Image (tube, rainbow, N blue to C red; front, side, top):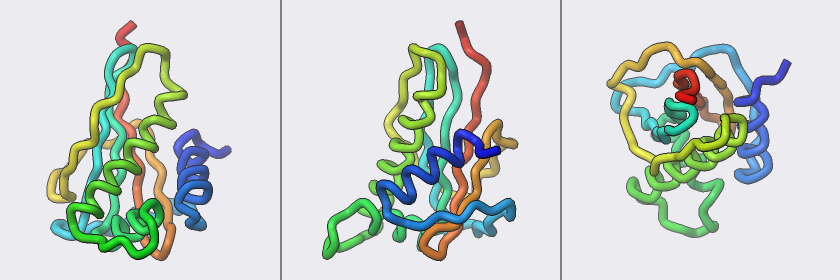
Length: 142
């Protein structure tokens, strides 16, 4: 059975970024200092956050997927692109949450900070790089 996160991932990767996607059960080996995490919190009728985790090279692959050809990709541009893509994931995920949920702007972290086990997880490969989409959701506040 395909999970909601896999459905969202397939649509974003293939439909928007034009990247073939391959789902994997193997955890990516993200090394500290070589990884970015874009976080988008949600609050209201349901609370939690969605995270998009990528290596530095993976973030570059995603940035190339949403920016026009020929744009100079500096570190800030790549990080901003990762945040925008995380926001797209969160907006798509929000459609499966109860009404009354709000999203925060993206925030960023590195892989040095350990996080607890997610309530939802999708691992995938696209453009030769590995990625993880994680959801940390608490029960509805309603």
